[in-house]
Length: 123
Length: 207
Image (cartoon, rainbow over all chains, first blue to last red; front, side, top):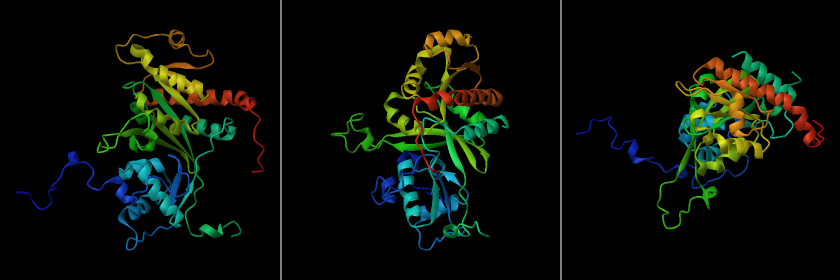
């Protein structure tokens, strides 16, 4: 028989909660164009676990330091699109702030490139 | 305390800028190994679902019950300073995931196309992609053990890339070697910047 802490399903069963259930069926964020490398960070150090859904609380705990959207997705093991919706909710309700990546432009910022070059040299 | 941002008083600062470099090339050429060699964290993997973007690529008519298709993206991170973070993204190799490439390439500083001399043709699509979108790229030939060593110029001929595009030999398992690949790319992008600037008149901004 199964012991108490043994799970009755395994990984082959796939996700037990359908990913879009967490976003209440939404497949795209209401606003905020979030890129894969948009940086996000929690505004407050304490996380309100009483009123927030567990997924939101988990994100806020994770984002005590700036992380990219892709990192949040990888850490939570949730698809990017789902994470973008959840992050967007947290940004809209003031729990998080975000910073878009350097704008896509054909004319890269020379100082920025030099900083990247120096940084890689120091590795 | 004149400089305190009243809106975010007590909150964290988000002064960091994120930039990305892509690592492209055929399946099994060593993209994730390269990302892992220079990343400060073990390569992470995120996945994107094939949603409405897949219309015309995957016809789901009649098989609506089909499990959602996902594409995995491997990436690493190099924190250059508290204000600058460099992300390295491996591109998904399979042709049916082209739709991901546009989002990946958006805003990328440039790309490394990894080549394996035993199957050079597997990096043709990557070279095409970056050439067509004017994204600066270099070719790094991953020298697998036992693979025939070709000179960079032979690889250039085979790939028919512009003579200005740097082509270097590397070993993706070696951190120093990968570092050299990145340095070559960034120096190339810097050298290219004036030419790119002349490409189009820069937008006048007041910032």
